[in-house]
Image (cartoon, rainbow, N blue to C red; front, side, top):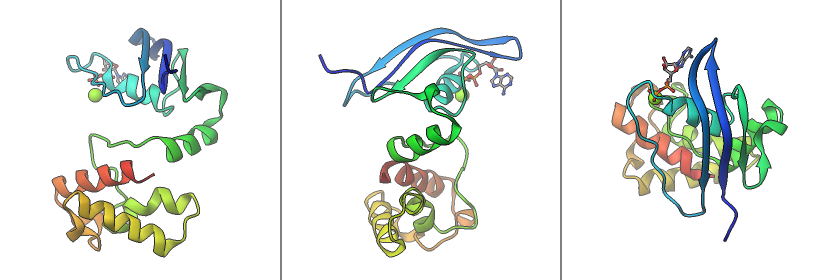
Length: 158
Ligand SMILES: Nc1ncnc2c1ncn2[C@@H]1O[C@H](COP(=O)(O)OP(=O)(O)O)[C@@H](O)[C@H]1O
Ligand SMILES: [Mg+2]
């Protein structure tokens, strides 16, 4: 059997004493599609933030492609996220002053890809998602749906 791409063991998280997660184990295999479901307040967002290395859980470990997330510092986790994870947040987390192309190209630009090339890849990705029209529109002027598609393109680009 192949090793999981993403796994966590014994994730416990308390927000100032209030328990949100009480011991989560999860393995996600390559190509697998997993949905985390449950009522509001059951800890879904907390779990996803822990898996992404954005939130350090009170207890437990997370590994991505065999790398222990919490053995890395905050900068190391940010770099790993930029290179190996794509995220679409619940609320608009695009940079409002940047255009659609620039928002999508951001992970590539931060990784050092030449600007012209990064912007071309970004536009292609926006076109595939049916929102090539907002390539030159600043995020602050897009509709909610357009913003989420741009966020999806950004999540997929690396
Ligand atoms: N930043 C926070 N500070 C304090 N409590 C929080 C915070 N975020 C979430 N919680 C609490 O943790 C529990 C789980 O929340 P959350 O992970 O956001 O659930 P879900 O995404 O399933 O709706 C809830 O009881 C929520 O009120
Ligand atoms: Mg949530």
